[in-house]
Image (tube, rainbow, N blue to C red; front, side, top):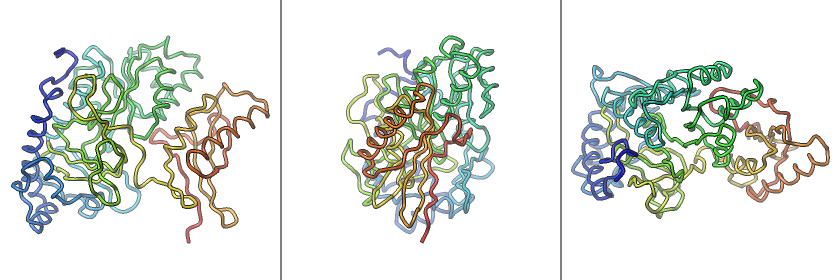
Length: 436
């Protein structure tokens, strides 16, 4: 075994039977810890649940689900299972209505989190000789501090640039010899625009070799564009604040699914309507349980993310199962004229056309009591200015979208840079329909 390509070979290549045995042990311990919280203590007592409820990994189905509403309804500390004196950090969502979701951590939790991020980065070739620049926001957003501590754990020289100020980001990349950067996909595309505006070519004028992208849904086509523009390898990262943050799952060099770190999490894929397990390889809602947290473990948490397990073994040699690219969420699904549509479906079609930018906006509105979809998409410099070419492209894009989403949207090409910009997650949908 080539142990140099594994950060923790004894964990990453553990046999499936040994891995499931470890999961059972940690799940039983997690239930014991969770029952110290007011929420789980009351719930599990009422349902007669104890650590002895778990004999095999399949017994996790005997446990009730936890939802975002449970977190909000027990705000702020109802799910905390540790003494307050042992809590060292709190992260919170930026919820705009009602109570936000709050997650707290012990030092053990933070140490394990940093170790997972270090494991992720090492897996894709990052070493202690690299310069790691983090363009994510710090503070309550977990992407900043999560990758900061993980990169430090690995021994990288870290540049905590934080979000925004693209000219400063580029100066740091050039001056400090940045080799690895963490960015959300939409910002990576915007950063490239600034490189071009400054007359710079990131392939020639920087030492960049790896992009870590995540935090917002994106297609494989968008990832490939980032790789082509910057001359790097871009790896998909998945995390959620309820599960500490980034580092739950990560792509290996094969770039064929994200390995879930199953020594820390148990992942199930269920039918979002029946909540029963789906067959291996089928798409369903991801349900996730943390099994190595002491401050505020969450058990069978409904993520609302739609994905599937990729069947089979990974050529990289890691035995931890792989999640496919996320197909959307059960709660960002659009319903128009009785048709279920995910923004990711639209992005996938738009990314097939190199004449189009990565920035687009979907607007749903009501005109004369009829709901319609308008898709504004920026055009790039490869597009001809001739009216005939514009019209031909518009018809082709509209036809492809209709074939994919089964309704006919109104496609509008807009000038590059005209859609609203944000340093946070890209806003893809505006729903202006009349509410009856």
